Image 1: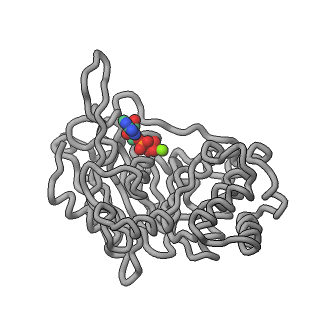
Image 2 (image 1 turned 60 degrees about the vertical axis):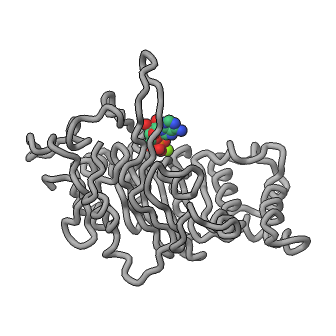
Image 3 (image 1 turned 135 degrees about the vertical axis):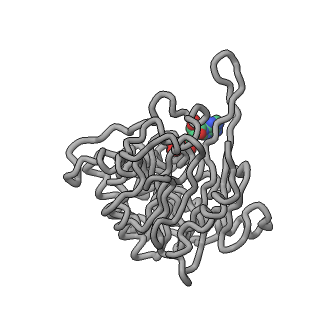
Length: 341
Ligand SMILES: Nc1ncnc2c1ncn2[C@@H]1O[C@H](COP(=O)(O)OP(=O)(O)O)[C@@H](O)[C@H]1O
Ligand SMILES: [Mg+2]
């Protein structure tokens, strides 16, 4: 696998144009994450889950990370929040490298950068009331006690559109959409400045998806939050994304300000993702998540451009199989990893 320094250099400059003087909260440079696994016949192989991923999340900004199942989105999220170390590359929060943070810095980081899961049910304690759970978070972080804590619990529930009576109830008494609201309330309890939301609406019915997306957009506005918003579907992030990064087989293949990307997608993969989006919004039925097809296992990709096997670019030719294309800036703020686009 090629780890060309030029590519890393180019990739590390992604979003440079859009950052200006804005405050960079979370920054990844040249992230890679490889997993060893046993394939058929016990043959050891390496999955390149994430390669050359560089991105920045600015204050008050929502960056969407989009790509089909298995392309490395959740792994990127885990690296960004420090749940596992990268094989190479760095993650910085407010300029401080996660790998060299002191314990107090790390605790502050863990508080300020919160994760919202696809299915919050798995992470909600079934034997604890919602109020008990939120109260516990507030106590653990010494954020509120006594009456102040009760007031804060009611306030958090209100923020996510639930009434105070929800505090007395248990997770199983809520619908999927309401549980996602509870998951969001729990993330908000510690007053984060970045929320990493990993497919937060993928498990919900389409009618409910729009409500939760509205809530997330509204909260961003009211609380001045930054999001890394992960989805497998470009339609879902349209409502919340300021910028979009599209991933394919572990790499970012296109990154741009959102409106430009929707208006004129550059990479053939982004085009196919947009073409796959049924137009009317909200769409009428739950869509199935697309998956990397047979043969696109990141460990079994073709020589050269990883997308070659599926590429419909009219100008694709033998040059495409020479090397993995670099992520290059086609016009200010528009990055694409394709030698023909
Ligand atoms: N802990 C792990 N061990 C081995 N392989 C993993 C692990 N986590 C993820 N992978 C592999 O890394 C690739 C990317 O996975 P993931 O980040 O979960 O993708 P996504 O969230 O986009 O669906 C997949 O091929 C997946 O099988
Ligand atoms: Mg995932």
